[in-house]
Length: 304
Ligand SMILES: Cc1ncc(C[n+]2csc(CCOP(=O)(O)OP(=O)(O)O)c2C)c(N)n1
Ligand SMILES: [Mg+2]
Image (cartoon, rainbow, N blue to C red; front, side):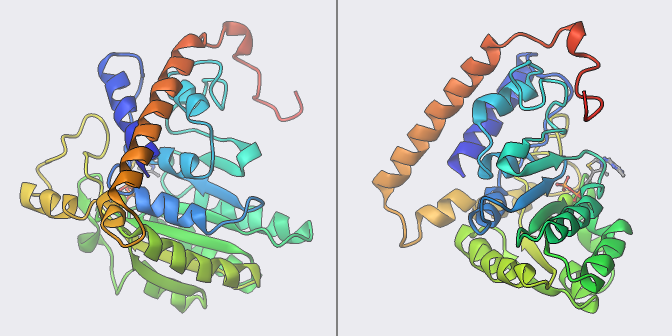
C-alpha cells in the first residue's frame, strides 16, 4: 500500500514537471482494495483493471520501474511506452490490462475465465471496476454468462462513491451492485474497502467459490482522496471538504498501522523502503528513451 501511495504521488509530481503527458487517475485512499484482492489471488490467476489501475498493477507484482516508464511514455515501459497510464498490461504477471473505456474490461474477464476452464486450469479472473462501471449494461450480460456457464470470475466493484462528479447514490437503483449480483445467483459480499485485512478475507472466501465454478462479486466501500484525475482538485464542487476529511480519517495505511498486526517501526521501515523503490523507479524510467518511429506499428498485430 505504501508503494502504491508513493508511486502515485511521484506520478503526480512527474505530471506537474511536464514529464507525464495526458493525465493521471490516482487511487490514493483506495490502496486496500488493490492489495487486499491481490493478496487473495494465486500467481496463476488473472487480473483486469480500469482507468484507475496503477495500484492494481503494482499489487499484482508489476515492476514499479517499468510501470513508471510506461506512464512517462518510455520504451522500457511494460507496453513499450505506447499505452500510458490508462493502458497498462503485463501478461507475465497475470495483469492482462487496464482499459480506459468504462466497463470494457468486465466482459473480457468472462472470456479469460472461459479460456482457463477450457485449458483445464482452476485459475480465476478478478476484474476491478468502479461504481460508474456498475451501471454499464455489459456488467449484467457478463454476470449472466458467468453464472450460467459457472465460470471463475471475481467481479470487484470499487465503490468510491463518485463517477467523476456523479454521486453513486443518485444514479444507482436498488440496494447496490452486490444485491444485483445475488439476483444472478452470484455470491456477493460488501466490505469496508479501507480495511485491507477485511478485503483480503472476503476475497479469499469468494476466490475459493469462484474456483469451484461459482462466480462472485465483491463490493468495496472506499473513497478517492484526490480529484477524479489530475485536472480535478481534491475538494471539487461535488463533495464537501468535511466529507473528504472524514474519509481521510480512515486512511487504509493508518487503519492497518493501527491494527494489532503492525508495529510503528515496521511501518516506518516499509514506508522508507517503498519511497526508495519509487525513487529508483523514476530514475529507471527517465533513463529510458522514448519509443522511436520504428516501434509505431510493432505490437499492433499479435503475430508480428
Ligand atoms: C464508456 C465510457 N464513458 C465515459 C467515459 C469517461 N469516464 C472516464 S472515468 C469515468 C468515471 C468512472 O467512474 P467509476 O467507474 O466510478 O470509476 P472511478 O473513476 O470513480 O474510479 C468516466 C465517465 C469513459 N472512459 N468510458
Ligand atoms: Mg467511482
